[in-house]
Length: 186
Image (tube, rainbow, N blue to C red):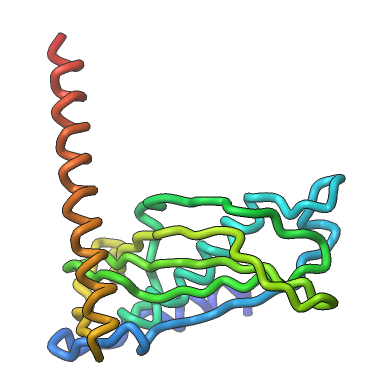
């Protein structure tokens, strides 16, 4: 059997998800780790930013899939991606991800990336990001996802900060669309 056939048949009928059951941040939190090798780096031994970005996208998608229990999520937006320090060949790069905000069909995953030198045991924060995913149904249309409910005060603060960030982002998006309409009218 062709491996792609297995994928298509496995998820032919998406599982029913109880949308009344909210999930906490802890429900889908995830960490992915990988040792950086020669193929991941440039001639100076620095890991390529694109390698880190791919790891972030894959790790954050795991959180989105776990939260919505849907095998099909797509990256809708990378809200920001800040590189803070380099990772090097031989470092173990860890991508720590947690759900921060959930809309009707979209989910914002907060990401922190660290690099650990296995000999010195030094751990450095090397990047951070917010990645927004949309869950899709069998017809590749946006699918409603379960709400995000805080399990404690700390989770409530994270969700509120993300809600404020989303409101600012929506305002900026609307201002940009208005500028585009004005430019198109000229």
